[in-house]
Structures are given as structure tokens and as C-alpha cells.
Length: 117
Image (cartoon, rainbow, N blue to C red):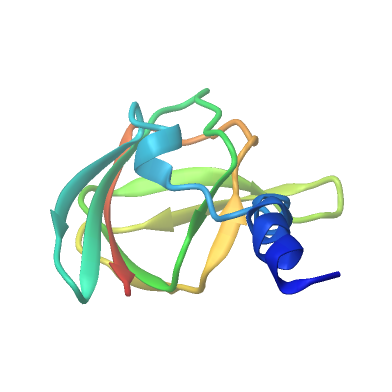
């Protein structure tokens, strides 16, 4: 393959590789951009019972709970457990892609997600 053909084929090859999905773009009903600069991006996320967020991705981030939040988590053995956080609790969350799972929050939950760049 000559150099010109390779350069023409490069965009097609890279288009086949999936890119992370931006939560603000794919789920604007859940995520809102609160702040962004060259080091961090801050998203406000509102989780409501019964919502199913589409597949999306996050870089490493810190999550801060803006109100008490609780929900059921499947523990992988046909059982579930309650997970909860108090107002102001900060939690580290590694990079991940997730979505397509219906939320089961006890009440509406609001968080700030501080994504590292």
C-alpha cells in the first residue's frame, strides 16, 4: 500500500474505533455542564428513580453528593444491597463507561462529578 492510499484510509480506520461518549451530549436530561477549564470539568448530575441513562463514559473523577442519596445495588448473586451517601460525601471514581441500567434511587439524587483532564 502506498503512502497516499494509507493517508486516505486512515480516517476510515480510526472511525471504526469507538470513542468515549460524552455524558452531557448523550444524556442532557441527567448531566449539565457546571464548569470547565483546561484541568477539570464539573458536571451536575441528577439521578431520578426509573431513569435509564444511555451508554456514556467518564475519565477519573471525584463525586460529591449534594443531598443524601441511597439506591439498591445488585451484588451479582441474585441479591441486592442498599448503598447510601450523606450530603457532602466525596467519593473517588475511576474512569469507566457505563449506562443502559435503570436507576433505583430511593429519592432524587444530585451530585457534582469533577472530571480530571
